[in-house]
Image (cartoon, rainbow, N blue to C red; front, side, top):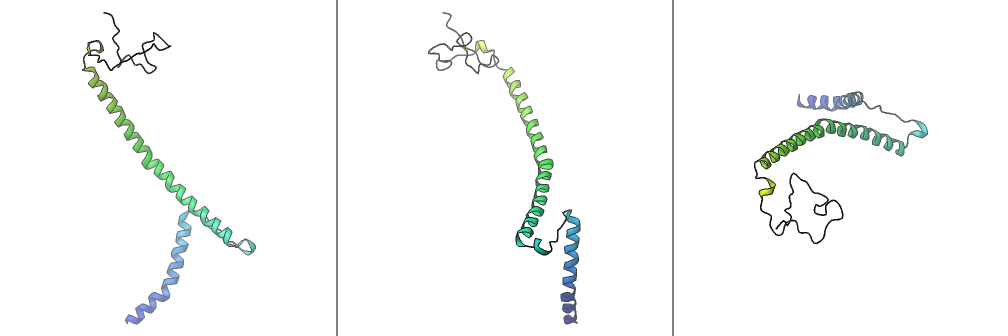
Amino acid sequence: MLGLRALQRTTAAPAFRRQLIAQRRWTSGVEHKEFTGAADNAFNRERAAVKEHAAGSSDLWRKMSIYIVIPCLCMAAVNAWRLWDEHWEHKSHEPPLEEKVEYPYQNIRTKKFFWGDGDKTAFWNTDVNYHKTDEE
Protein backbone atom coordinates (compact mmCIF):
# COMPACT_ATOMS: atom_id res chain seq x y z
CA MET A 1 0.00 0.00 0.00
CA LEU A 2 2.76 2.42 0.94
CA GLY A 3 4.72 1.55 -2.17
CA LEU A 4 1.67 2.16 -4.34
CA ARG A 5 1.24 5.68 -2.94
CA ALA A 6 4.89 6.49 -3.51
CA LEU A 7 4.61 5.23 -7.08
CA GLN A 8 1.51 7.38 -7.68
CA ARG A 9 3.27 10.44 -6.31
CA THR A 10 6.35 10.02 -8.47
CA THR A 11 4.42 9.43 -11.67
CA ALA A 12 1.93 12.27 -11.08
CA ALA A 13 4.51 14.84 -10.01
CA PRO A 14 5.91 15.78 -13.45
CA ALA A 15 2.43 16.25 -14.94
CA PHE A 16 1.42 18.38 -11.98
CA ARG A 17 4.58 20.47 -12.30
CA ARG A 18 3.98 21.00 -16.01
CA GLN A 19 0.43 22.14 -15.26
CA LEU A 20 1.70 24.48 -12.53
CA ILE A 21 4.30 25.99 -14.86
CA ALA A 22 1.64 26.51 -17.54
CA GLN A 23 -0.63 28.20 -14.99
CA ARG A 24 2.18 30.49 -13.90
CA ARG A 25 2.85 31.46 -17.49
CA TRP A 26 -0.80 32.30 -18.11
CA THR A 27 -1.19 34.30 -14.89
CA SER A 28 2.07 36.23 -15.02
CA GLY A 29 0.87 38.53 -17.78
CA VAL A 30 4.24 38.36 -19.51
CA GLU A 31 4.28 36.70 -22.86
CA HIS A 32 6.87 33.93 -23.08
CA LYS A 33 8.68 33.64 -26.37
CA GLU A 34 9.88 30.29 -27.50
CA PHE A 35 12.90 30.62 -29.74
CA THR A 36 13.44 28.27 -32.65
CA GLY A 37 16.26 27.71 -35.06
CA ALA A 38 19.14 30.16 -35.09
CA ALA A 39 17.36 32.50 -32.63
CA ASP A 40 17.45 29.78 -29.94
CA ASN A 41 20.73 30.65 -28.29
CA ALA A 42 21.92 31.51 -24.78
CA PHE A 43 22.02 35.25 -25.45
CA ASN A 44 18.37 35.48 -26.60
CA ARG A 45 17.17 33.26 -23.75
CA GLU A 46 19.07 35.41 -21.23
CA ARG A 47 17.70 38.65 -22.71
CA ALA A 48 14.15 37.25 -22.54
CA ALA A 49 14.69 36.29 -18.89
CA VAL A 50 16.04 39.77 -18.11
CA LYS A 51 13.07 41.38 -19.83
CA GLU A 52 10.63 39.21 -17.88
CA HIS A 53 12.40 40.00 -14.60
CA ALA A 54 12.44 43.72 -15.39
CA ALA A 55 8.69 43.70 -16.05
CA GLY A 56 8.03 42.07 -12.69
CA SER A 57 10.38 44.28 -10.69
CA SER A 58 9.16 47.49 -12.33
CA ASP A 59 5.61 46.52 -11.41
CA LEU A 60 6.75 45.99 -7.81
CA TRP A 61 8.42 49.43 -7.66
CA ARG A 62 5.36 51.09 -9.21
CA LYS A 63 3.12 49.55 -6.57
CA MET A 64 5.55 50.54 -3.80
CA SER A 65 5.62 54.11 -5.09
CA ILE A 66 1.85 54.37 -5.17
CA TYR A 67 0.89 52.49 -2.02
CA ILE A 68 3.85 53.21 0.30
CA VAL A 69 5.73 56.35 -0.74
CA ILE A 70 2.77 58.63 -1.47
CA PRO A 71 0.97 57.90 1.85
CA CYS A 72 4.25 58.35 3.75
CA LEU A 73 4.82 61.72 2.07
CA CYS A 74 1.27 62.79 2.95
CA MET A 75 1.77 61.79 6.59
CA ALA A 76 5.11 63.65 6.71
CA ALA A 77 3.48 66.77 5.23
CA VAL A 78 0.69 66.68 7.81
CA ASN A 79 3.26 66.24 10.59
CA ALA A 80 5.36 69.17 9.30
CA TRP A 81 2.28 71.38 9.06
CA ARG A 82 1.26 70.48 12.61
CA LEU A 83 4.76 71.23 13.94
CA TRP A 84 4.82 74.53 12.04
CA ASP A 85 1.54 75.65 13.60
CA GLU A 86 2.68 74.48 17.03
CA HIS A 87 5.94 76.44 16.69
CA TRP A 88 4.24 79.70 15.78
CA GLU A 89 1.66 79.20 18.53
CA HIS A 90 4.55 78.93 20.98
CA LYS A 91 6.27 81.99 19.50
CA SER A 92 3.09 84.07 19.94
CA HIS A 93 3.36 83.72 23.75
CA GLU A 94 6.87 85.19 23.91
CA PRO A 95 7.45 88.84 24.79
CA PRO A 96 7.79 91.31 21.91
CA LEU A 97 11.16 91.39 20.16
CA GLU A 98 11.85 94.93 21.38
CA GLU A 99 11.72 93.78 25.02
CA LYS A 100 14.15 90.88 24.63
CA VAL A 101 17.66 91.15 26.01
CA GLU A 102 20.32 91.51 23.35
CA TYR A 103 23.54 89.86 24.43
CA PRO A 104 26.94 91.17 23.27
CA TYR A 105 27.63 88.10 21.12
CA GLN A 106 24.46 88.63 19.05
CA ASN A 107 24.40 90.73 15.88
CA ILE A 108 28.11 91.58 15.88
CA ARG A 109 28.81 94.08 13.08
CA THR A 110 32.41 94.96 12.22
CA LYS A 111 31.36 96.77 9.05
CA LYS A 112 28.07 97.55 7.36
CA PHE A 113 26.55 95.26 4.76
CA PHE A 114 26.52 96.76 1.27
CA TRP A 115 22.74 96.30 0.85
CA GLY A 116 19.78 97.99 2.50
CA ASP A 117 20.54 100.02 5.60
CA GLY A 118 23.74 98.01 6.22
CA ASP A 119 22.44 96.44 9.44
CA LYS A 120 20.41 93.45 8.22
CA THR A 121 21.90 90.19 6.97
CA ALA A 122 20.85 88.51 3.73
CA PHE A 123 18.63 86.11 5.72
CA TRP A 124 16.99 88.74 7.95
CA ASN A 125 13.45 87.94 9.03
CA THR A 126 11.62 90.79 10.75
CA ASP A 127 9.26 88.31 12.48
CA VAL A 128 12.15 86.62 14.28
CA ASN A 129 15.22 88.90 14.19
CA TYR A 130 15.63 92.20 15.97
CA HIS A 131 18.71 94.33 16.44
CA LYS A 132 18.83 97.22 18.88
CA THR A 133 20.87 99.98 17.39
CA ASP A 134 23.00 102.19 19.59
CA GLU A 135 20.69 105.08 20.40
CA GLU A 136 22.44 106.22 23.60
